[in-house]
Image (cartoon, one colour):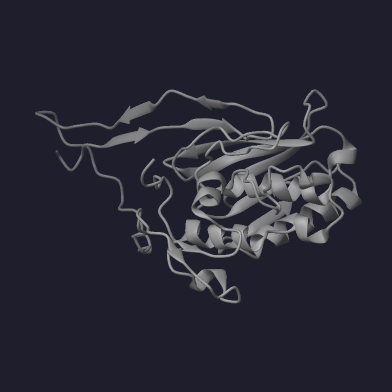
Length: 264
């Protein structure tokens, strides 16, 4: 291929979370740059700055049982299992396997590749809609996720750097909260979190939906991303990431977005 030829293929997908949405896959778009033949060559554009190299992450893993519950999640082998975290819970929480069995609970969409955030997140709210008390909920929730990931999360009334997440009201929805996001090659590129009413703009709901934005699905154990209906729990332990959730976030960050689950 000529050095003046370019081919860019971008596949996009719009995904609604399992808290009350369905998955919608959009068409791929293809852009083709110019080529040269007998015509005069165009003046090439100035070279772009050389990006800082980033390590290539693996896309394969093996499960390893770990007995030490005190070991930091970031130091676990890939993929370390301990406590309530089992192979089945990983399949549910990370690869969205439809394993929620509690009657009346919302199931995941089905086994798929891993998706996650891979850079800064910009959470945007309208100050005419959300008062200071609700903004405090958003600030607390962004800190809860920010403590687990290496990427900055900004919160403000205008977009900052990174993938944008809009916070909006939707009185027509039936669940307390839901999210929608777009992904390219398993990487989150933007979306929104919706609330049914002001009464549902609370810590658990926002933190849960922001966990979906990162890439987590529902699972059958207790925790912030549980599908067991812990949203109305008064136990503070249900309103933060559990050990299994923290372990799986760390494992996801150590793998390439789009990683497939190995085996059935």
